[in-house]
Length: 235
Ligand code: DC
Image 1: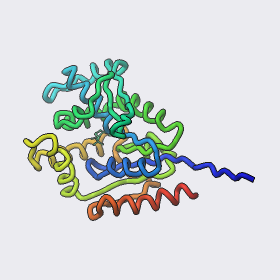
Image 2: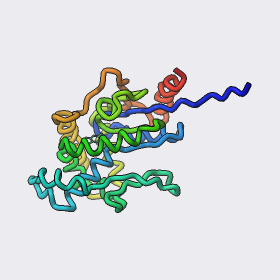
Image 3: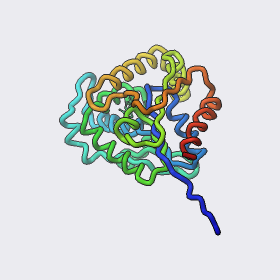
Image 4: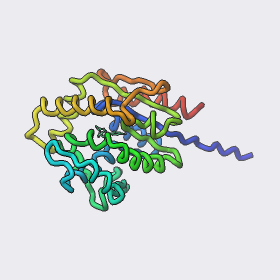
């Protein structure tokens, strides 16, 4: 008889503080398994960009009511880019890959992400992306709120110095006016806001596996994580 073994598809949730290498890892896993990678932070960044463009945030002033009212007309989506083998992020049909990585967006994204109505809208989209499984998603509340039943939950950590250096090196390629201190300040502030907000704060779920990668190369990290992934696929 022809025994056709159906390949099991799972959901992998990766959470953790800023710049702990979540997206690098998530992309690597997705590539190995031929899964879809979803960067949930990019979605919050796109909404934050919208708020800046529409001048809902000026300096310290944030018109949250207007933000909430505008939500039905804020369309965030991913479109697969065959040439580059990545997903482009769109805000109302405009590609915003670069714009969402700016320091302006980084400085306001945490207050935008703290609004429950913003979260509701994006979480719903994220859950739809997981319906067929075969997804690796990274963020802050993926294992706790978006996919509480995820097959594998990882919680990434790394020491603050390592994280600041990583983000700094990443940003330097596009913005040479930045100081390491500026980047460190932004990371610390976002970590504080993301961990202390009322709605879906960053936390380690009981069933998440904590993974500190301060001392690991990307290759070492992937090797160790793929062992976890494979044992999950075999079970
Ligand atoms: O992953 P990132 O650093 O690009 O995310 C940007 C911000 O978006 C982060 O500071 C907090 C918010 N975020 C969130 O609240 N929930 C998620 N699942 C992902 C990101």
